[in-house]
View 1: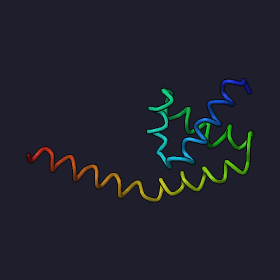
View 2 (view 1 turned 90 degrees about the horizontal axis):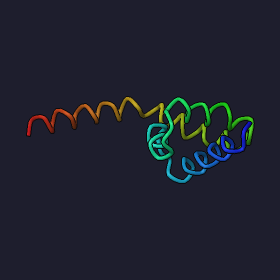
View 3 (view 1 turned 30 degrees about the horizontal axis):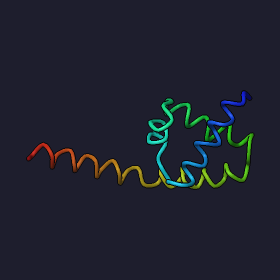
Length: 84
C-alpha cells in the first residue's frame, strides 16, 4: 500500500474517532469520494490496524442503525422549509 494512502486512511480514522462524523462528512473534509472513504475504513484499515478498525466499525454500525431517523428528520425539515 502506498504511503500516502496509508496516511489518508489513518487521518480519516483519527477524524472519525474524534468527531463521530459520517462517511459523507469525512468525504467532504478529505475531498475524496464516499466510496473511497468506505473502502479506506472497511478494507484498508483492517489491514493496517485491527484495533482501530473495530473502534471505527462500532461508529459506522451506529450510523447505519440511526440513518432511518436522520432521513426522516431531513425530509421533515425539507417540507417545513418549503412551507415557509
